[in-house]
Length: 344
Image 1 (cartoon, rainbow, N blue to C red):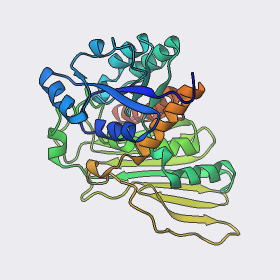
Image 2 (image 1 turned 120 degrees about the horizontal axis):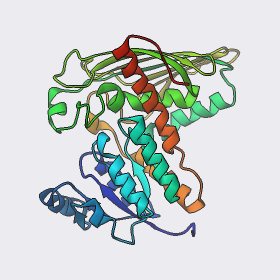
Image 3 (image 1 turned 180 degrees about the vertical axis):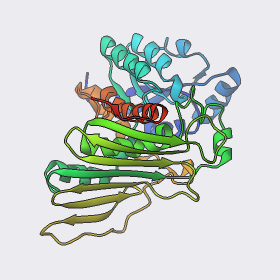
Image 4 (image 1 turned 60 degrees about the horizontal axis):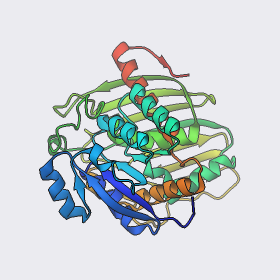
């Protein structure tokens, strides 16, 4: 495929997160939005006005269009599988919002279908594309901290009752797969795994302490990584007023702390300590999901375009996205059964 080709995109699901995809596609020179798909004729009519392209309310009808190259799936978390299978069968590449799906079985079907069809599958974990995280990841890969010993992911956010009642799927087991960990916390959990690698065992507890939802609004876990390091996760949507997510990385030679996507602390033995530098707001969703900007989405969609044109794997493919889902499902299983869960 020519590296100068402009790829035609369609968006399935026209809720709040679809706006990030829309803005990203509009701003990328090798992307063009040609269609969207919503859930009902009325929503499709409104979406057509909003996005300025033809709108459908049948995924099957949308995918009959031969000009579509890439499908962005922005439906409820538990509804990623079906449109992915349909898109793959039509030879369309797929970008799905996080999580990949709400069960490992459904996620594995997505991965297998895209492999069989020879199309790319990417999952949105846009925080991996933020400049400070990429700087940290590169430093870790270069051995700046030496052997890693401890990693902490803290996502002490707040969501109002109105947030959970704004959609019929949020906080439900069928639509969301849970709540605070699988929806909000998964981003920082993904970053933790991106740094530390595979998880060997997990022991976790979840609770629902504030909201009237099926899923958890509070969860904690202890991890043992395959490399011997230990880790902790604390995730919530019940911590008022909500605090920026925090990723702490400790190694034999020093420590690095990210908060709200920005480097807060950088301490390496034998080097002068680095503190926080002046940064623009990177868009933490600590108390308002609408505060999250689209720049990192744009960077990840640009990576997907390059992956298609250069015929390589996207930075966050299905297998990468599966790892955070496996850990979270392990936490849920551990909490339900009261014991440690082996993941590998």
